[in-house]
Amino acid sequence: MNKPENTDAYIASFPAEVQTKLQQLRQLVKTLAPDAAEVISYGLPAFKQKSGMLVWYAAHTNHIGLYPRASAIEAFAGRLKAYKFAKGSIQFPFDQPLPVELISDIVKFRVAEIAQKKKK
Image 1 (tube, helix red, strand yellow):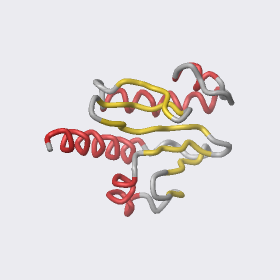
Image 2 (cartoon, rainbow, N blue to C red):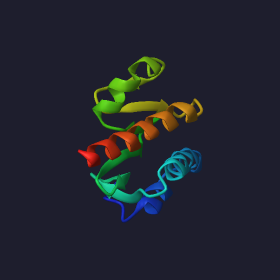
Image 3 (spheres, rainbow, N blue to C red):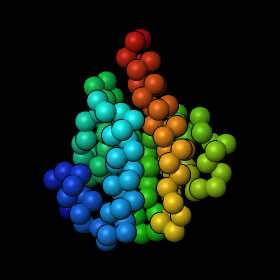
């Protein structure tokens, strides 16, 4: 896939069932971080606060990837055991509902983390 022009173009490039999950994740982040701007970063849809990147997300062959930075992965490692995850990424399989509560908590953590860094 070539670098998408915007988030809408990125999402539209996937099958309907994948688009639904991407839109669900997108709306969740928009609700929790209404001041964050939608951007394309590293070819992926992402949300950016004034003072830093909030999260990236993407569709892959069998999962939705969420990229909330290593600090969030460390903070939520205990709650991520049901998913594949690495230093900066989490995989949410297509055949399971998105864990809305977990994603919400991760996004809230990142919003607070960025706000704290801004104060320093």
